[in-house]
Image (cartoon, rainbow, N blue to C red; front, side, top):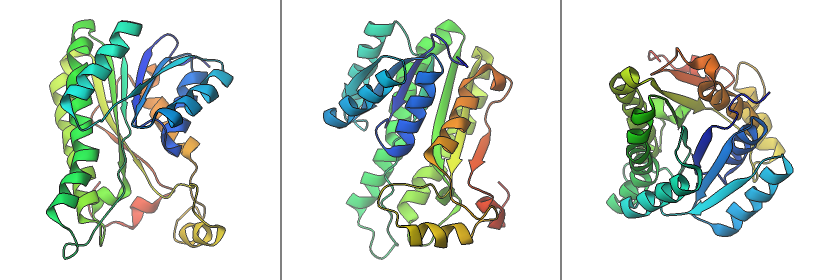
Amino acid sequence: MEFVKDRVVLIVGATDEVGEAISLRFAKGGAKLAIADTDQARLDGLSSKIKEAGSDSIGVVCNPTNADDVEKAVAYVVAHFGCVDILVNNIDDTSGHGINELAFDEWKKCIGANLDSTFLFTKAVVPMMQEKKYGRVINMGSIEYLGWKGKADYAASKSAIFGFTRSLALELAKDDITVNYVVKGDVSKSGLSDKQAEELAAMLPVQKIGKPEDVALAVGFFASDASKYVTGQTLFVCGGKSLHFSMSV
């Protein structure tokens, strides 16, 4: 089903496993794809997979924490496609530290990668969405945003994106721009052993860990017209893991 036919989709942080699944989901959905990340070789590899899925894309190498780089990246996409209809902020620096081991430089690096990139790309595309009176901003989070021992910097960055998402949703609703948050739980990835996967699955209500494609389906929902009356919301893709948390979510 071409649920985003001819929509211009910019995916930031496109080459990790979740980003790749999101990219391929949109490719099969009829989107015009712009994929952004820091590594040209990985972008080239993803572009080939997108082509195999029946779509074309442009790759943009940039530093997502540098304002000038981000502006140039968005300008390149607009020069090629004319606009950005849908933005997916998928930068995910998962490095985390306990407070006693957390140097200020490491704090700034994690906050910069996850939060600054989300701010910079969103700020760059929102004006054209406001002009068109249409837009979808989908921010990517992780269940650690609820608080996680030994990951103060990572949790802080993802929690900040939660607040950023809700604030923007309120601000941009009048322009027919929705802003939503997809929170992933334990997802299979390279480097995760079968034993580790089994141990993680045993702690989940559904007794299995997710796949990147599960996360991509949630992103696709927020990008489609099925969610046009949904904004400022958080969708957990975590196999019920969030149910173990006592705080209201």
